[in-house]
Each structure stands twice: as C-alpha cells, then as structure tokens.
Length: 315
Ligand code: NAP
Image (tube, rainbow, N blue to C red):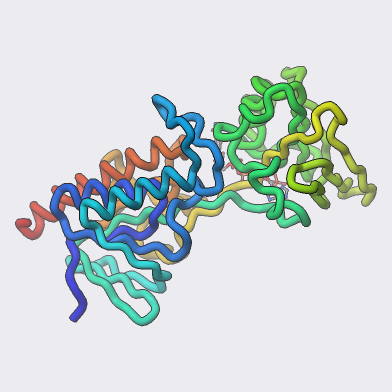
C-alpha cells in the first residue's frame, strides 16, 4: 500500500510550488509531482521584471530555484514523474505514474498551459533571443525597436496594442485576411497608427546568430517569400507569438469540468466541480496568467485543501 499524503500537487511551476509551500507550512504531508523541469514557463524568462516590488538580479530559473529550496525547507516531498492517470472520484484520490502509484486526500492540479508554437525553423533556437510568447514579460526589452506580433485572436491584437507602448513600430502578421479578435478590440487596433498589418501570411523562418536578425514571411495566397532584416542600427527586433495556448489538461478530460478550450473551471477558492480537487495557475480559466496570479492561486488552493481535509477527515 502506497503512502497516503494529505495533498498531491501535480505540476511544479510557480502555482504548484506555492501550493506545496503553503501545504507544508500548514503541516500537511505534501507531494509535488513534476514530469519535466521545475518552474514551468517562468524558467524561459531571463528577467522577472514585473514582479511587485521587483526582484533585483533575479532570473526565471533563479527565482524557481529559491522557490524549490523554500518548499523543501518546509518539508514538501518532490518526485520527478509523468502522471499517466488519475482517479479523483473517491474520497482517497489516486495518482498513477509509471512504476508508482500515489494516494492523497486532496489533489491540486497545477499543470499549466503552454503557448502554442508556430513550428517554423528558427523559432525554438531563438526563443528568449528575440522570440517571445509574453509581451508583459518582454516588451520592455524592445523599447524603441521594431517588433512583429503573430496571430489574429484577442491575445495577438491586444498584445500588439500593448507592444506599441514600447516598440517604435508593431507589425501584426495574420494567416487570414480578417482578424479573429472581437470587433471592439479590432477597431482600437485599426486606429492605432503604430500598428501595420500583413494579411494572409505566415512565418516561414526566423534567422539569427544568437539574436533574431531576420524573419521570412510567406504569403499564403501567392507563395511569395519576403525576408525582413533588422535595421542596421538596431541589429535585432522582437517577434511575439500569440497563436493560442494549450492547457495541459488532457489527463483530466471527462474527469473534471473544463471550459470549451480545455481550461479547468474553478470557483474563487480554486475548487473544481470534484470534491477535494483544486486547480491553480495557468491551467485554470482566468483573465491574467502571470507568476503573481499563479502563486496566489497556489496559496489559496493549499489553504482550501487544508480546510477541506479538516472538515472531511478531521486532520
Ligand atoms: P485564439 O483565439 O485561439 O487565436 C489564436 C490565433 O492564432 C488565431 O487568429 C489563429 O488564426 C492563429 N493561429 C493559430 N495557430 C496558428 C499557427 N500555427 N500559425 C499562425 N497563426 C495561428 O487564442 P487567443 O487569442 O490566445 O485567445 C484565447 C482565448 O482567450 C479566446 O477565447 C479569447 O477570446 C480569450 N481572450 C480574451 C481576451 C479579452 O476578452 N479581452 C483577451 C485575450 C484572450 P485563425 O484566426 O486563422 O484561426
């Protein structure tokens, strides 16, 4: 029989680590399961600029390293494993990994969401070197530079407008001849003199030696390829990709309530529709996906898990 934990946290990004910290500080036995590296999306950010109060000289990886250290100091256990299946319906929840099965009175799902990639050559290699998936995080680096925004949904158009506060020019590239974004958002963007539009086009390639230096744009109707080079005084420019997000919820489909796009539905206490199961961070339906909101979700989920366990099992 495997050990019974008070709470199992799936995912070790900021939400999961924060949940682990609050759970362990509340003297609950907590296990954090992470399939990949700790930290989630934040480890792809060099500078954590927009954290309240500022974290001087902090990088995404160093912030995560301190979060992990803190969680361990308070006694949360951690294991690197891929969760293959979950049984969440009984009072005792079961989380199955390859070669191991874990049990808990409550489960906090903090598996995150990943920005969808375009999949063109150069995108992966130049991520963090001019290619970004987060304007809030990285727009400041492109103050007075040129930037491209890719996509035609609400995120792409809103973020393109946000980018105009920093960049001297924003070019939005969309694969069709009309935007998917809400009309009200479109209208504002069309009025913004700093935004140019390239229609019916996709990114064929991103080139650069260490930093983005050029982008190859393919017209989907004519097949014509156009290469745009960085201005020689700049040497580089930004490419912000907003072609949707993919919540990491395939394990939970048909087990807990998700919205149409796959995000977990929770109430303000991070409770899902299944008793004893909580969602925290980017994986849940919410309006702002940032470290500050993720760590807040994790803290709330852990405190609510403790209350649930007290009521249900008498701690
Ligand atoms: P989205 O609505 O799924 O839009 C993704 C955009 O990327 C679409 O324009 C799509 O083109 C394009 N795209 C997808 N795959 C692509 C690829 N491989 N290459 C190039 N382009 C690609 O995603 P989102 O804009 O992130 O929004 C997600 C959800 O959040 C939506 O429900 C949205 O309404 C909501 N949201 C709301 C607000 C707001 O209300 N203020 C703000 C942000 C987000 P097509 O149009 O051709 O499919």
